[in-house]
Image 1 (cartoon, rainbow, N blue to C red):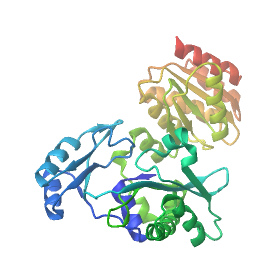
Image 2: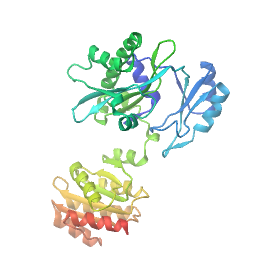
Image 3: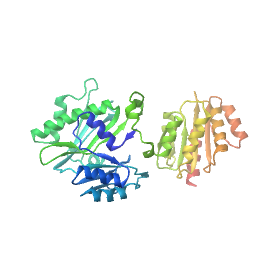
Image 4: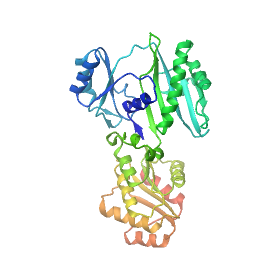
Length: 377
């Protein structure tokens, strides 16, 4: 689960990280009132779950409250990567001397939290990693002990030469790790971490992604979920208990089991196609899940063909077949459907599909190759 910048800053403040004040506005009038209270120059920042806000025109510097109102009027309602801006953060502008990047994320290879820091802040860390990987210092944190003071100092020493700045940054590293752990995050990022001419170190931006598996024991964090800033298909999938990730291809995939779903997408690529999604209906034998899956897939206008690849173990093939038939009754499905069903209650499933006018494959290669050919045609 992603949370907004202003929410991530709340988590950072709770951990003691120095973050400038800021307030949320949902109308231009509110933005003007907030800017008036702060006085001086402010920054008006779109709050959406997307990178590239600045490039899209979603971050603007305002010299006064009237200009803040004008910027808010333009930003509110703006479309940024398919997401509509419904709120803006108004925060005092900072006098910036230097910018750095500090982030901590779960590294699946080392199976531990890993810090990444770079003196090249203010740009995407992916860009730095691609163009100048030597500019990044990494540290894997032992989960038994957390980040230790000498480790945090080692990271801070990579960013600054001034002892005063190093001391402040060392403390911020340890506070960031605390915020990361306390929130159940999979990623916490400060970009940029700035220094001011007066020698202060501050986090003027914040980004966090929360591990969905942590939410059940953190109701306060779960309450930060903003459904309006999520793609509708992802919200629908979560409510239906489906694992779904939107991709850019045209072969809609509906599979049971994450491993089989990944193998199916690999095979789609192998035969020259592009998967439109990762969608795992899981091990449930509930036909309603199949109906929900088809509703999600058909909501994507890029999908040209729908591919079912079901290996019935816990999942019963006849329940999947009933779900496919029921979905075609409930909703108008334009893309053709190709189906592979094998395993538990396979014969019953094939009979159900045949009665409804469908045919099914038993070979995974055959069904995927057919789906890719149909999508290209």
